[in-house]
Image (cartoon, rainbow, N blue to C red; front, side, top):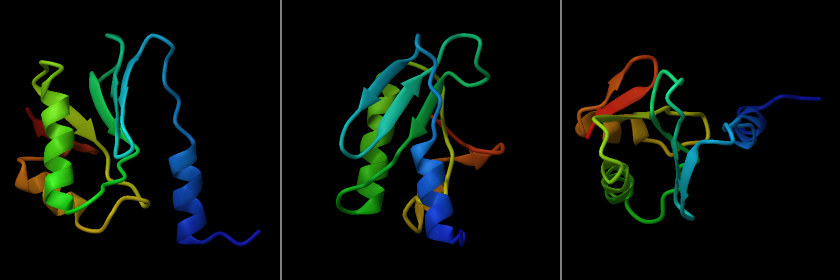
Length: 104
């Protein structure tokens, strides 16, 4: 089997473990997990599939994340994510730790 960046990205996107007691907010464009208390991070963005301009799509996800009332969200940038996502997260105050955390 030949591994390509695309096949690795697809495999990465397909595998996500979420505990049974997590809260999941999902749309066609993103999934946000509110994780149980025993996780290092409480709020986690996964499966980002933006429609339309990237900056606006990121803004919509962050608006939804704010509705949970927590101080920050963890948002890893993955191979399958759109080009420019890291810069868009940094524009919202994101910092790498090793995933982007964005103050809400």
